[in-house]
Length: 352
Ligand code: PEP
Ligand code: MN
Image (tube, rainbow, N blue to C red; front, side, top):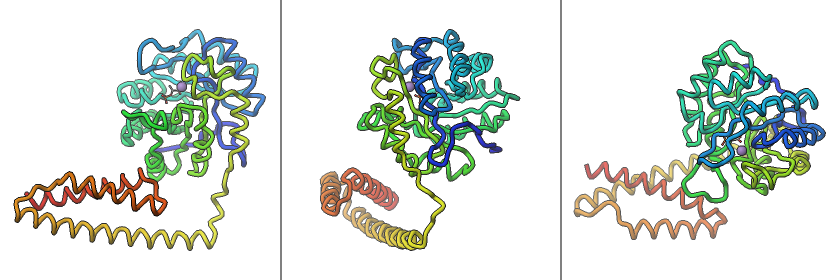
């Protein structure tokens, strides 16, 4: 991909790029009240949803074109740049007509290559920064595909937004972070800025601050955070929006670590990690060899591969051992499930 810097204002040594504003532009008063407070707190890019693709009917789907003059007013009065979500070519045209400075493509739209292509076609020849949220499903290639469609249309000021991934059983987070996916995106495209959206990952206020810090520690380039003048009364995503003064607190508490200080001791620790990983790999290979021997035994004695009781016992015991060694139970379970799955696969090959 041929990329240029996003070149958005507000990036300082102690502050990443921050885009903040309400989930939805509800009324002119709500937009202006929120914008004035955010501007006073040093936010330079204002977000608000004009068109809101909602998962289910009946939710607030945005004011549409009616709300675009409010964005113009925000820009004129506060000097902040404005950003909004576009889900169709028509949205993109209208947003540009009203001088919106930054466009983003939402998670539901990124999952639809035809919609993304239509938006890309409309933006041909326009120099506007476009941010692309990850698709709702954890599919890195689909995310990259959307970025490429925009890039092929000549959009060079491109960025990615990590907003987490939908799951069937909601647990702590509204959308699972699955950090390895944006990390892999960064590895593949080191010049592509990646912005974290802790609001949609968290789904609730109290988780936003730690997520912001985590994003900074993982070297994300910026944050897009939902902020509303009266969060509890928000027409969409109320539980996850922060009042502007709370957002300020969160931003002021961020620790931006200096990543250039790769010290001697860090190199030493990394060497240790490399060695431990080597040991782990060897142990895994050894375990697979033994599993294959068991496979041969099972074949010769006409036994089934999967013995549920044994499986349950392995997972249970390993979790107990792990937690005795201060490992997270969920983590231990996942590791051994993966190991067991691979053992079964190896044994199936022997059976064939
Ligand atoms: C939003 O930013 O308000 C939004 C709808 O986000 P997402 O596309 O990530 O669900
Ligand atoms: Mn929202």
